[in-house]
Image (tube, rainbow, N blue to C red; front, top):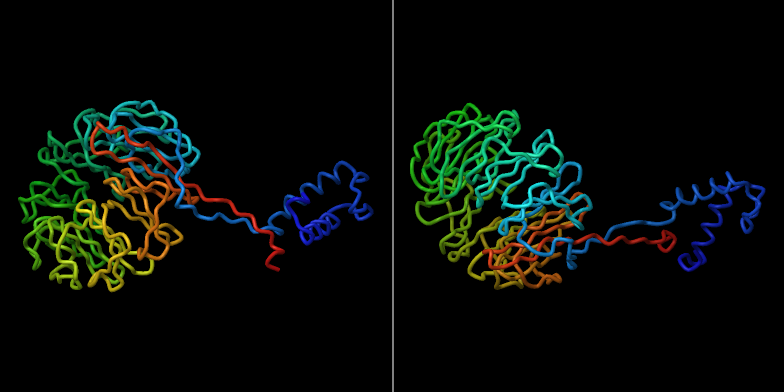
Length: 445
């Protein structure tokens, strides 16, 4: 004890022990205390620990540690409501694993093969898994991912299912064998065909009034009966990304130009951006919209709900990931073209270079303490920023391809390796734990 506490600390501890002990006993001689008194003293010391020390956890975003999964490509893990993590293989047919210790060690589920691109937790705790690249169908789990069962959809590839406000699930087909849109009313155990049985469809979006809107390589449709039947909008061709619903109910969608709808997706109007490929815009906290190009046209912004768009000072290149930080700063990166990372402090009208002027970064996340973490899908590793994206520092992962990290409820970060082909083994799953810091309170007294 004396090696840990200095003189001031020992004096405080002695006073606390004397207060908790039998008043007739000497603080310097506890041997005369009765057994139950000694137990009370030990209990009192433990209870008083927090009175004497500040215990905090210092975030460590620079040091990534190996889990027991050191090879393979693994999609960003999902943290369940009870803290369990579930991760799926996305290239090497290694199935689904789960972790009960914040990602340090992973155990096999009964699914030891196949690749799964999406796992979602439903409102009742059921898990549903689908794949965009492997013909494994749709599976479900009722025990936090330990065991999985087949639904009645055992083949083909599917986008991420969405759980609607009434518990119905809706999923769109993807891949080489288009199967349209299906829905489930029993938590993913059985799926039924909607009236759309062909083409591939992005995950439908549920609007604030319950209407569903789905986009595809065959236009945009909408449903008013929870996905059982779908009606054509006036956009019946073209390949469109998933739309977003703005705070006032307007819908905006990107792809071949940018369109908007003011009637829940039934009809769509052209904005003044009618050419080029554009990501679906991001709505900022003040209602401004910002959109990045996918074909060398830079970044635009709109202040009228997507009807008209203005050029920012970035008028070329390919920009894919735009996020708004808690203080309103915007940060943008690209997953191709070695464009680095930029930031904006005026809602996307002008952009400034960070100290990262090259490299591809497919994901940037803001942590609960405001730290930013950027991961690369093209060999540039993982970096972090503590000044809202102005400057970035290397973590110990200075190379490799990674999906977006996830911040767990206790602050731990977990990330999965990303590979583009099966010719690369991948680097498995890593984690970044916070460091426990114990500070004697008397040092600041």
